[in-house]
Length: 459
Image (tube, rainbow, N blue to C red; front, side):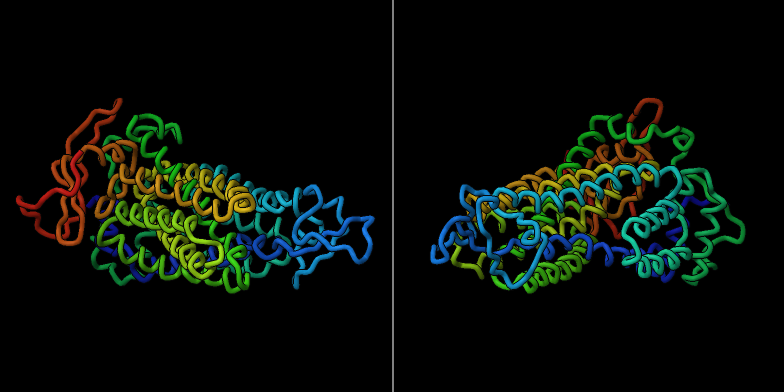
């Protein structure tokens, strides 16, 4: 008996006990990333200081947090902060302050390079091998300070298998079958599979068509449009996310409490997003979060600087919203890009996200010229991205696309209707794309659809 990989998952469970273990192990990697992401917030804190003229008498009044001619070299500096940072150690203040932002930007540049290179590598050698190489690189470049926890995770990852979907796209059906059978066994679903079965590609004749790599993303106007929107969306999500995270130290009050609140607010954001996306859909959740976050950030511009509590509250609302939208973006993009180039495509949008991380520290410097202007810029970009994301297809309840033809099939739905609390696609139409035929893709059925139901979206 021949089954597609979607048929197998339907029998053994999409998120059984075995997949939950894999999920927990892979999620643990993000815990170590946070320490590196937020390092500059603390070690690069903007210090308080007094600037005296070099030849002035001891009774002369100093400039407070300002430099003569904006040049720290013309000052006899006295730092009054209770903490030390590399900004105070190397006098990175006034005209030299941009170098603090550059430190974070250079680090993000490294993240961007990794996303660009390793995304394509993962589509060639596999997801698991690429992850192992990344961890080895972390051990080598971070030094012994990160050796113990990183090595521990690497050892644990030996028990995480390669992606079955990627194995199928590479023609390694036997290896994929072994992984799926192991999942079925640990999920106690082995009896759901036939005694004799083989995997087949879900792409029909299209499975023999060789992928052109990331060039497939520009092979059709519709696919190109989806790619460009997601590139901008990821850029904005990252720029605003890291911008608001780093801005926590400038909101007034204790920097550690402000940063802790900024991180704590992400927990309800992600939990809410996870609960909502399977009910109202990925696109609506993504767009709503970005529109609300953008509005909250723009409102900060109209609040007097003395109302620190109100500004902090709006900034946290913006952080909550952008955290939710960023988490949904990962799911939504993964469900739009086809398996055959998914890692490469996600690598490209991830590069855009890292560019956003590079730009964010410099946008924050706008607040030195116009109070709270940085929040207005973040808000306007986020609001615009939320509007553009309305053009993306809804992927809830749809099979994962295996190739470009499946992506184009998103557009070929005459209607998207709501069945209960789930979306369903109906009346799918074939379209010729080069030598390929875009074939109907059967959605996951969650209930009966009446003829009198009003469509939510028409093309």
